[in-house]
Image (cartoon, rainbow, N blue to C red; front, side, top):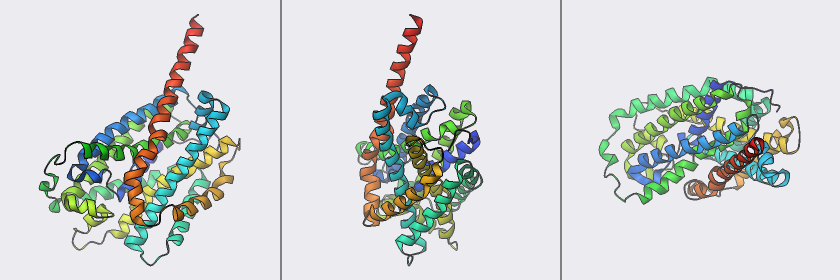
Length: 362
C-alpha cells in the first residue's frame, strides 16, 4: 500500500477509538483488582497517555516513515529487519487473540451450537475483505459504525443506573496497592500499549500536524467510555460478579428487564473488535510488503488470513486458558514491544539527532 493512500485526522481518531475499545467491550480491564478495578484502570489509562506520547514523539522525529522504516533508519538494515519481523509477529498474534475473543464470545453467548472453526473462518473472511480493500475503506467503515457503539454503550449504562449499588465499590483498597498496581499493568498493556501498532498508520494521515489532537481526543473518549463501563459493571455485579464471570458486561445487561441485548452486544463488539482485527491484519501485511519491497500489500492478505485462522484455533485449548493468558501472561509478553523497544528507539533517535546537530554546528 503506497503512501499515496490517505485518511483524514477524524478517520484516524475513529480508528484509534475503535481499536482501544476493541475486546474491552466484553472483558473488564484490571478485573483482578476487584472493586478497585476502576483505580487500576485510571492508572493504566494515564500510563497509556505517556506511552502513546512516546510513539508520537518517535514518529515526529521520522515523519512519513512507518515503524518498519524507522527500524531500518535507526538500527540498520539487518538488525532493523529482524526487529520488524518480531513486530509483524506481534501484530499477527494480537489479531489472533482478538479473533479468538470474538469467536469465543459468539459461541458462548449467542451461537452455542456453531463450530469454533466456522466462526473463525467466517469472521476472518469479512476482515480479509476489508483489509484487501485498503486502509481508506476500513477507515470509512469505522467512521460510520464506531460512533454508534459509543451511543449504544452510553444507553446501556443509563438503563442500568437503577441497578447500580455504590456499596460495591467498597471497601476501598481492601488489599492495599499491590493488586491495583499489578492490574494497572494489565490495563496499560491491554488495550492502551497496543496502540504501538499505529506507528504503521501515522504516515497515512493526511493532516500530520493534527495527530496530537486526534490522539488526545481518541484516548479521552475511549478512555471515558471504558472507565464508565468499569464503574457500571462493578456497581451492578460487585467484586464477586466481575471476578467469577467470563464476560461481565454481558451479565450486567441481563439486569435490564424485558430486553434481550445479546444480539446488539454481539454486533457492537463485532464493530470494535473487527476494527481492531483490521488494524492488526493491515499492519502485518503492510509490514511484510515493506520488508519484501512489494508495492502491493494485497498479495499477502490471503496467506496471512489462513495463518490468522489457524493460530486462533490452535493458540488456546479452551476459554479459561484464553482469559488466563490475557490477564496473567499478555502484560509481560507485551512489555518489550510496547515499552522497551520504543523507548530504546527514541533514545537512539535523540542521540543521532544530537550528533548531527553537533556536526552541523562545528
